[in-house]
Length: 189
Image (cartoon, rainbow, N blue to C red; front, top):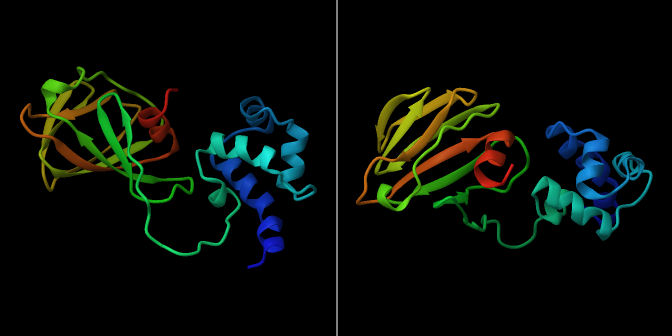
């Protein structure tokens, strides 16, 4: 794939990122500082994107520039994991974010070192698998304890929280979040 083919395909990818996030042109404009007409022309391929236009779009979509433009991968095919720490938890992405579902390894430190859990609600579903340790899952106030090898899936409009059940060892899970769930867990909404 040559540079012209990569650039010609950017518009379709930009529209895909925006529609996958259910953003209107006006909403994306407010978040990026680009005008709605500029975004529309970029998505339709009527203008070639500049770095100044792509950077704010990549920030809003939380993807690297090369993913935004679908630049061909070269070299090392491994995913380079960059942990994110939030509210005492460590989230390690397990793939390159491409919209839709995203998998994370989540490390819960011993319970005595974390803030008390609080109920969350947001659109979507959540699924997790306990790799090691033990976690407590509260769904609408009903507490379940899951050990290594167990999994749970639930509607996230139900008030919920997950916490390490032990105060002496960390717990690790694999969690799969949709876009809304990822936003709730990894960014300030």
